[in-house]
Length: 100
Length: 234
Image 1 (cartoon, each protein chain N blue to C red):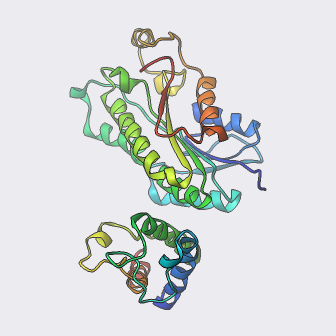
Image 2 (image 1 turned 135 degrees about the horizontal axis):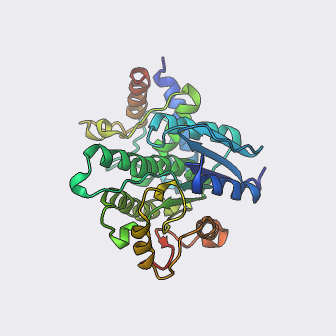
Image 3 (image 1 turned 90 degrees about the horizontal axis):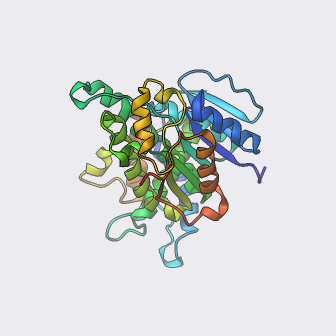
């Protein structure tokens, strides 16, 4: 069973690459409450695509499980799972622990 | 290791796919090929994986294996495809579904997965397969030609979406080539079709590799979203 703490670490790893492409004032901190996407988010839509692709790859490497993070369900959730590091970790844990 | 060039080709058991595998292996590429059945191609730099190109889980496994073995993917050639000739009034939905599944969904899955790998590399070349049957609007080829029209559209949009990752996406539109794909087409139909080309002959395997050579060369990094038709068909 995957847990949120593990997912934070994976997201931080994925963010290393992303941060290298962001300007200084847009750097994303390793903090679960950090806002990723939305009106106060530091990522634009392409940045989010990059993050999700990296995250799916890292999850596949670590858990040997192929999950699709940006599916219709994620897009239609009332509270976007992409809003913060915390919500993204929570969503990924749910997917990891429920998908075959 | 740094100079290693890796090409993934779909539908490598026979025809154009088999030819392209041998052609690029001869030129020093590492080739990862797939088909629904085993391949008799034996080469130290060739890796074969059995899968249906429309089986998403299997395709993902193929990419994983290829990355494990070769470490990268520089070029993807989406060659696998099937055709069916029939009047629309005689075309079962199942035929339409089968053709779209292999030609469109298969190419889409491969492009997407290759895009993920190439995005990380900040480099990649994707070559899809279109057909002259689309611009020639051939009667009897609605299923095949429309599936390949979808490929052209996918190619154009992907070219835009992938551009900033250093990935180019283009398509080649071959004329009929002597392969299993056209073996059931009547001779007179084939002659009439070839007569509509500017250059009136059957295509050859080398015509296909020539276009791919051009599209994958480093100097072609400013060419994307294009479909290059053979035989002077527009």
